[in-house]
Length: 269
Image 1: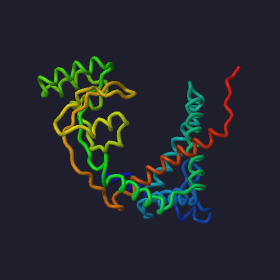
Image 2: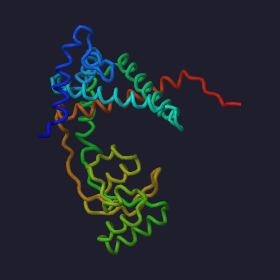
Image 3: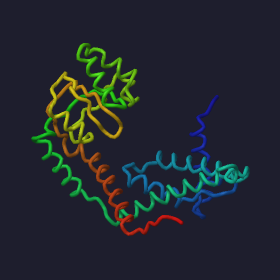
Image 4: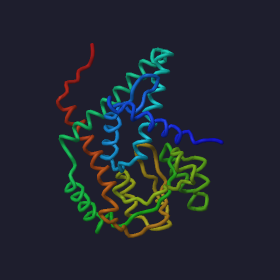
């Protein structure tokens, strides 16, 4: 009879935990102990990110720590961290972790409050009541390298608009949308896209192709508006998660800008 390995592991951990209780250890992996305080610290961080403290969460964390410990022991045994360019890879990974910790520290000193999130929600809601962002657009695009190529494609589409998808698949430089016949999957507001595209959208009507290709930093865009609808702002509860993440992104840029301003950068001799 086969027994689920995770269930068996849980039984082993449970039976061993009492023998290590006095030392604060939960389980030993080849003699190296995994401590209760280590598990508690990871649980605390998980709860801060929205997880629910539960026996299942704690068991999953313990299982993960056991696996990590077993891998680390095997890495040390084989000397893997010293082979090839692995030291450089490890250094880069450490720098990435330190960068993340640096920003976490900045965010603690410059926290985002519920009031900040609500204020940005209200700002966005006001922007979409009227004007250029009162409508949202479903669009398709073909991106090419030159203006003349864009004009040639628009000329072809003037006589055969049904060729848009085929041309997008064959010629668009933007492969993600090109492979889908040029369709951009999400509805967009004019201010959600780069300015030249947003400016073009507000002057277009449903089913039409812009008579001129639009230039951005990635090429020349042949744009078709597939549909237009009035933008409906989601409720605060629905939107606040995304708004918070947007504010986090702004904080990251704010932190970088502040650091660069006080950093002396000179050309090396």
